[in-house]
Image (tube, rainbow over all chains, first blue to last red; front, side, top):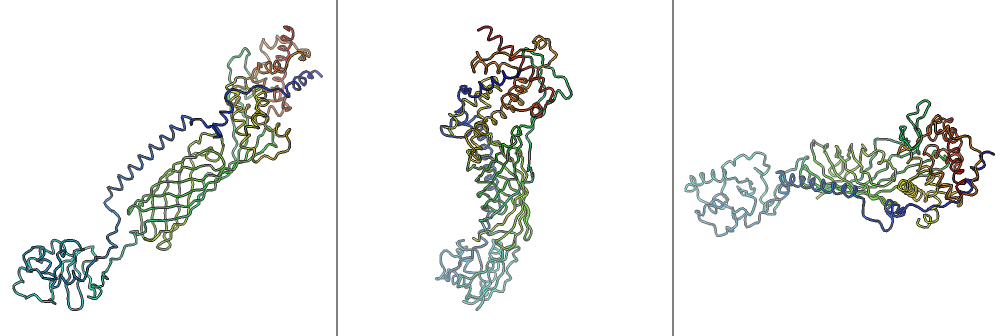
Length: 402
Length: 164
């Protein structure tokens, strides 16, 4: 056979060995994150620095907004005014005794505690009858009006233990403590009324949730296709090519099939104030891909990557009404591959809506948009092909009672 | 992994250098090849050392082809050039006096396009139809490029054996 000399060459070269390029094993170790890993590649460092700077700026802006927020936590609304029996007794007869303490002009009662009227307690005026007490929140205007009245009537009506105050207390708007009639026994027991809380003001600081998400780009199968344009550089031979479509070559390198990622997680949310929430939690992601090499069709292999990640973000409650609230959130997430070495960084932004089923439980839906940074490895997976990944998150949220 | 690497790296380097000329390019190809090999090993069904060896060689070949396409290095010789016309139909060259290293180097000297066709036809055993599909060329082109590779290689073998 004319080509037998080629077969001879093939047989000669079958067992041929050649020294590998210098530094090959080091490059493999670095790429796979094996032992004796050298310093990280410069692009990865600069990318992490950029992300760190962005995170710091985001945190600074967040805390600046938080500390300038005038609507702080409404904790005072849950506190009951503390009144001891002494202070109750001290304000009987109520009006003139309190005013006298402030003005330091009236005859002090022997039983009057020194702290009465000096702001230790919620400023309340007790207008007492024999069996009931009328609680009136005292304002500087009230005090001034009372001063006038007392000055006018002090000489007219003698003081007694059970005086009856006929003066109408001033109307306090938007203050449920303005006028409340309670039994005297409840007052002595400290059972003072607490205003009802509106449904839009949340008293639950912590929230715990479980969630799942689904990517919206359902790329079940992808083919990596390279197109190379004919290059006419000279190497001692003319390199023209006759025939049709001679300027374009198309070749299928390999066929990759990236399945839609499976993502589950538990979330933790902390309410900073009426509209701002801090979010974190733990996330699990499963990436499954199948590869086949067209050169040898029977050579197939698959890849299973498991990631555990920690998200960190903030959410802003932009609207709420009744059982429904809408919010915007953004954050960053870092994930670690459990069976390989790469770390996966991503940022995301979402707009969510939560429907409160009960006072403590709600369901939510969050269309989200994320960007997954290149992890710097050769691993091909879903997020390498789709770095901009829209998804939809859904889950349950439990608002832990304070 | 290190043991597997040490056992097969020289063999795979020889295969790689037949496709890729420069050492720097060969390092990139081999590095990516080994990463893919190590990544796929856990899910690979072991069917003997020969099958394992063949599988690894295929990965290297595929990586090399991808690299050549990516770097625009698939250049094909024009049969109508004056240079090619000077090379007469070669008789069967005698390569027995040349060492494997010499033959290996001669193959590496060939132009990228026809060298790739020669490697796929002779060493990987593909048909011209299959090569045409892989490289995105016509079957006739594959056959003609293989023909040119033979003539060039035969001429170089004769030149070397004459010198000796």
